[in-house]
Image (cartoon, rainbow over all chains, first blue to last red):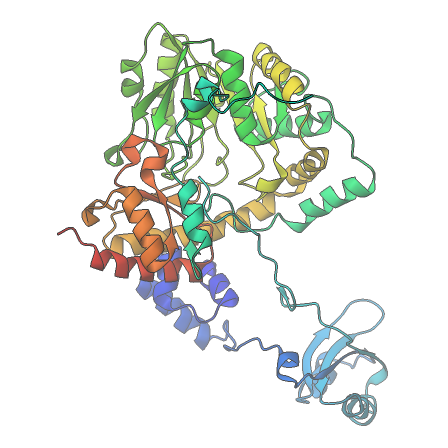
Length: 159
Length: 396
């Protein structure tokens, strides 16, 4: 069954019929599995992966290292929630190592991100300190190489 | 010195070479070159680039200066890895020092095997449809090619009794090419066991081309040499091209008993010296760390295989379910066209390239070979185009 989702993760536009053919799983079972996955949030949503740079609308991204003071009973979860509720925070991860949260922020300009960090993130109670790393260039994202996709150069007819 | 002796009248090409008919697919290259927007199902290699860690190992070997010849047998380290692989996968014991030879792809291995064992007039029995170089290699080695047809009714598996019928006092060897190019057929263990009995009964060698051994779907590949008593009789040919998407590296190997490997090495050392060193270094990495990628590639091929087989049956080109390699072999008989006409018209009219079945032996007539080592989007588009083509060309 996981094969269904592996296919969809690669290309969400594959139809249940196509997936049924590709896997040999009956169509009704494929449809049922997808419906169920949508219901229980195994599939969170369907979206396109857009290279905004090509549209002249490149965004500024930053990875913020956040050090926290854990709180009684809730540990890092409560403060993490206060951070991930900001729509600017695109991804939030609890990390092992020298800092606690990795927060990925997207904004239109560096100033926008800087002011978010200075005004929203850093002053939060429980945030001990932040380090901001601006993203300079994307080479590969989510397994996709952004420029110059690699295809083998094959002879079209070969016995 | 002035060349006065050379005249146009004198034929300089050897009779032996002239005996080999020209390749039936050459002219498709010219047609292809003149067309745009062609989807090719005519390829014979993976559409994956060699996994990066393997390429990286090749690059590293260059950086470290591994640019010299290796032993004629190939790098011992690689032979040791292959011996370990054959042991763990098929329970076979080959001595890496004496029973393994690294070749320039299975193509060279096949040529060496033929030349090492055939005397003029010796016969070798080979199933058809089969890979295109089986016959020419036999002829070039001075042997006599004895084809055994296989049929769709038996899913293109060769029958031991059909082989046995063709055995004469001159028969020296059998050649097996399973998983099969062009049909995608695989042999089951029982079928192979019966072939083994024939080999035993008539004291024959068996050349087993198992280059597609890793590309099987829902079945287990049986290595012919692993059958009881067969290691001594078998020249096992395999390599890295298909499983690891390494066609351009040209690395294969032969495994056989010492006396045969010695004979093959004798030819190899005078004609080839050794396989490319960089490729051998990369092949070591492939065997050590490449298993995960094989599994990923096989899973993808399997999906495409289902789409293509289902598609052909849907558009009326009956297709048995191939369980190996990356080819389907649909029947085109209902169009009333020969496989060559079919391929040519399909290319010109709807711009899909396939390989005529007759290229792989007479009994391949009525079929075309379509490779599913291409993206799903292309396979689906090709099926669309072929569906239109078939509708226009229903036999009148």
